[in-house]
Amino acid sequence: MSTTPSRPQTLRAVKGMNDILPEDSPRWEWFESAVREVMRLYGYRNIRTPIVEPTALFVRGLGEVTDVVEKEMYSFVDALNSDELSLRPENTAGVVRAAIEHNLLYDGGKRLFYIGPMFRHERPQRGRYRQFHQVGVEALGFPGADLDVEVILMARAIWKSLGLPELRLEINCLGQTPERQRHRQALVDYLETNRHALDAEAQQRLHTNPLRILDSKNPQMRELLEGAPRLIDYLDAPSRQHLDDVCASLQSAGQAFVINPRLVRGLDYYNLTVFEWVTDDLGAQGTVCGGGRYDPLISLLGGKAAPAVGWGMGVERVLDLCAVHGLSGPPSVPDVYCVVPHPQAVPVAIRVAEALRQCGLSVIVHPQGPEGSPSMKSQFKRADASGARFALIFGEEETREGQVSVKPLREAAGEQNRFPLDSPSRWAEQLRADII
Image (tube, rainbow, N blue to C red; front, top):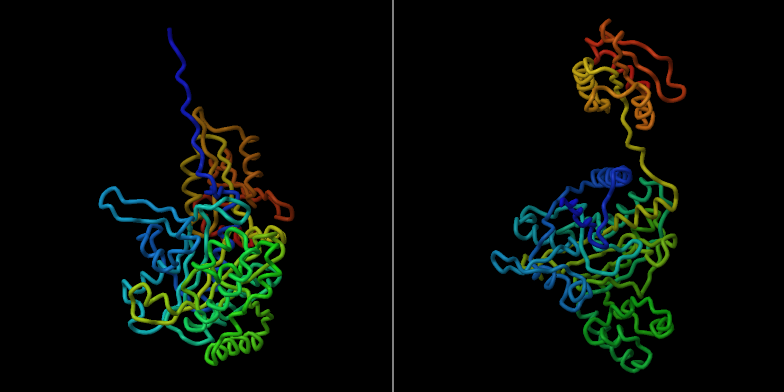
């Protein structure tokens, strides 16, 4: 008695880690192209660091009591050598590690950028995924407020390049360690006095990371937090001057902003300027880019002390925002689709297609079936569906006469013509001109 073998169970992607399918990829490529052009204009160079880093890098750099380290990292022990490793939850620490390891600052500051996936184990929702993608800039070795402004304006340049309406810029100053310590003590005293009004998360953070309580989204605590001591009131003269310099340069560049004294960052290494670009068009996930100055981090990770400033931008959130405003890049379609109605013409079609590709045209040759060439009707249907501007027809009559028919597939594209098979590079420019 024979039995039909059962099909293996269908495997699916890990929850919160999404495939980017071919029909979606052009939007990503359009966005990344815009980013790379802005980076070129500002003189920032690409750096690519490993997805897996030592867990200690993030524990030391981000802080042991941050949500990222305590709850969200994908960490494991390497079975080969027992190293404790983690998928990177962010990339600033990795870039700084690379700068220290390879002594990148030996001859002065470096302007760097990256694009890539990050990983955090949190509840997936719109704009927040377990594998998400970030663009980041890191300006290492520059102490002045001018670099704070430069990286802020780089984000603005990306919004403009994509055609987005201007987002809201919020800034704050976190000062330096002594100022934050004075403010921290005043804040803890205030919150202790009002402990009964704190939610469970705030009570947990009260003595570990009280500054993060100010970033609470709990509406029932809003009035309490509005009355809390403000860090900006504890700043000494140099920190205030740094903030004033940032504000003056932003105003000079025509960039509107608001000072938000409750704005903090979720990681321990920030000082002085912090900022966020915010939109009201994405619901609760309104921050699409955030960053600031992190002068202590390089020495914290074992390098020679050096200043630094940068930001991270959530790619998925920016693309969601583009979708809200109906913005996307050009569709990814071929220029030419080769219709090959008989097998004998296949070698000729392949040769011509290669010549056209060398001239910069995108070409698809219709695939042959197991029993020969598909019908002309089915090939033209696929040619039209591909979005190609032209179909090249390698019919028996044409190939016998050493020619190929070029048929326009879109409106106002001209009449059908024939061109010689032995010199495709000569008429490729005419096709390019018609396509452009």
